[in-house]
Length: 176
Image 1 (cartoon, helix red, strand yellow):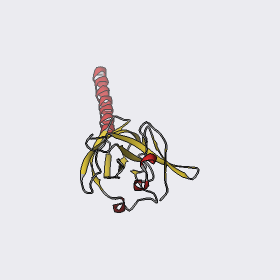
Image 2 (cartoon, rainbow, N blue to C red):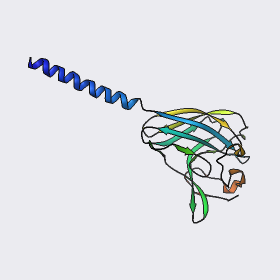
Image 3 (tube, rainbow, N blue to C red):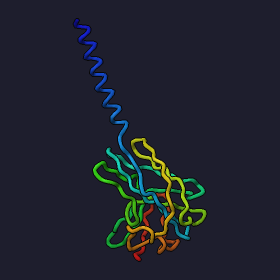
């Protein structure tokens, strides 16, 4: 009788553990409104909106080499009244609110584009997170005028010598 009780308790405990594990692995995680733009000087950017029910961090991004030689995570900061772009190691994604990558804020910087991206074309972007999750999405190329969230400044105002450099350098962004 006692062994039957121990067996029942062990089965019940195992069921609770399995339910807890399966619940955590089926969390909600999505990327929406993925779009990109480019400039004649070999630069581009990707923007998107991430939603999740668990805190995470975007730590890497990649695109096909036919689109850009390098893809980096960047942010725009106000450094004593001067807008600067700098590479970051990660972009936090919170369960409490959507993380929007947008002009003038966090974004994916595309460097060394072999050609200017054409409006309407699409390409695949792979987002990698600290948790090990990866998401693939199709980015559609738009003009900055197509985006209602655009800021005062745009990449089209940058000269090549003001363009961001690979390796985490902070670069000044002119105000438009």
